[in-house]
Amino acid sequence: GQQLNQSPQSMFIQEGEDVSMNCTSSSIFNTWLWYKQDPGEGPVLLIALYKAGELTSNGRLTAQFGITRKDSFLNISASIPSDVGIYFCAGQLSNTGKLIFGQGTTLQVKP
Amino acid sequence: GAVVSQHPSWVICKSGTSVKIECRSLDFQATTMFWYRQFPKQSLMLMATSNEGSKATYEQGVEKDKFLINHASLTLSTLTVTSAHPEDSSFYICSADARGTGGQYEQYFGPGTRLTVT
Image 1 (tube, rainbow over the protein chains, first blue to last red):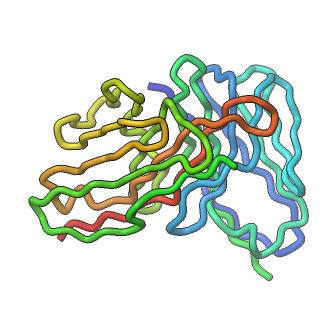
Image 2 (tube, one colour):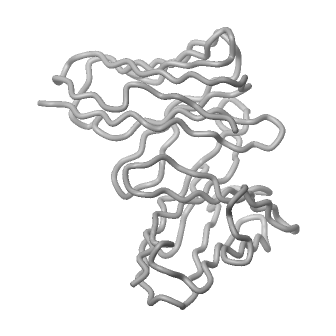
């Protein structure tokens, strides 16, 4: 089955630092999405990417849809304590709308 | 916009009983909703696709007779865990497709339901 490899698995950084995480896939996706999940909550959509090569920003977050359609990255600039959480990438299957999730990146920010 | 709610937010039940979880799209209509299960420190795993007015489509390995899904209206899908056992204890999350600000369909998630079976 299709799998997404997300890395790193976890990060512990100092407040103010920039963060980068990425996802790769063995399959092509037409849509990539990035979500953040806080403990005990459902995932919240951060950024959606629809075109290969697309670079999209949402505040301090920037994500790019890889040219090959098999990868995506998410950058967080000038991290703050409330950035703490688990970040998931997801590839969406265009024919069914199903999402395939990465394993998640746990981010901890030290004030 | 694009708010998805779930009820209850948490539930404790005894082994052998059934539990129903509701998923509602509050400000939009959803022809398709999805049900996921998430174990501690793991990613979300798709259980089934809920289609309004028709039978749900289950992922491989998910027992359709144990996890009953009903999508009777464009704003409500329910997941019933029948004859629950402790191994069914998990975080159940639903999602629905809605048009985002850019006009494309994006998947929005509910807040999840924590099920504990004793």
